[in-house]
Length: 479
Image 1 (tube, rainbow, N blue to C red):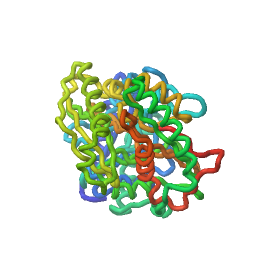
Image 2 (image 1 turned 60 degrees about the vertical axis):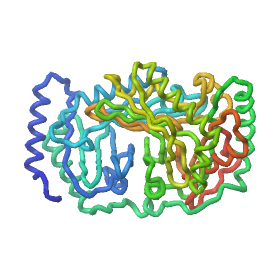
Image 3 (image 1 turned 45 degrees about the horizontal axis):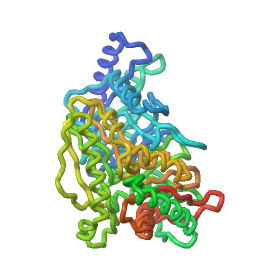
Image 4 (image 1 turned 30 degrees about the vertical axis):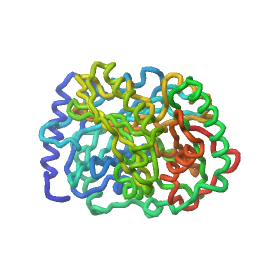
């Protein structure tokens, strides 16, 4: 252990918290103790394989150089679908965090306990297999870092099998094991070696391209006749990865290549992992101030940025997103502010038009505002309801988590939700990748196809050994 609180200090805090819990009126099932210990130099992305490896549920949130967070195990969780999912997820977060016994004083924001959240794009799964409308989890283990300052947190109910002393010992021993590995704890050799090798999108990819073109043509008819102002059609590409894939190695590469994005992993159980690197913020709430990103309009990073700024089609598509987000916030009696002109935001090999939007939330809960904003026109279309109906018709697969909110709420009410684009869903040795392009008047079919291929390449670039799936699990056209 590095210099810091002694075990006796930790134990005294744990015993004091235990007395407070036992003296409260909380039922025994509600007595959840949350203990935190400062640790230095531990990278949550690298340390995740060693953080309670027996736990099937694991999460990574890697906003480095901002907040980076690894979590494992579940103390309390919620899974449900339906139109009230945002409301019920907010209620669950409030109750779970409100019942915790944890020390608020003198703790930096990165040390706070968090409820982790993963939504599906649609409130109800469609036909076939689908993910729940929302999953919300209070994790057992949480390792967080911002800069070099890190915190390890253990959360557990107090019952006949667990006492405050037991939890203090468990936390102390876990911190010692993690720190013994040094600052470059990198997990298993397989996870370190899972960086993908270059692969081109061609040849066998003709199938998804053909199916996507058919859907695009119908979508453009709807735009041209005025039925829709915009529709964001996605494509899904299925790959077989012989020997499987360890997402942490890929996310480590994306940390270098997509520094402006937030990398994430949501492993519901072993053999089922959703992961990616999102450049798009649905909302961040810090001390009562909301920020949302309008991100629409895409080009290769090597292309002249001025061309994207001058593109009438891209500027119009971007303006639709900005106007919709600001109008939605005004309908909630908020006063959004944003720059008059978009700026360029580079994320790895892609550059986007970007406009940050801010507003004081005036006592509104983060998830009530997330419900208002999701889905933005950047991932669905306009008018929203009609666009959502057409996506169900034209996309012959379930979006699942793709383009849905993913993130967290902490013990002081701050929150961050990203839009889960540039993402993949791994089930066994089958990797499903999704990417979409916005269709408006003036869209050119060939250019939209190129944009989708560029976005798919964010994850497939470096996919060593990946092979197109056989016809029975072939790529299918979606946006």
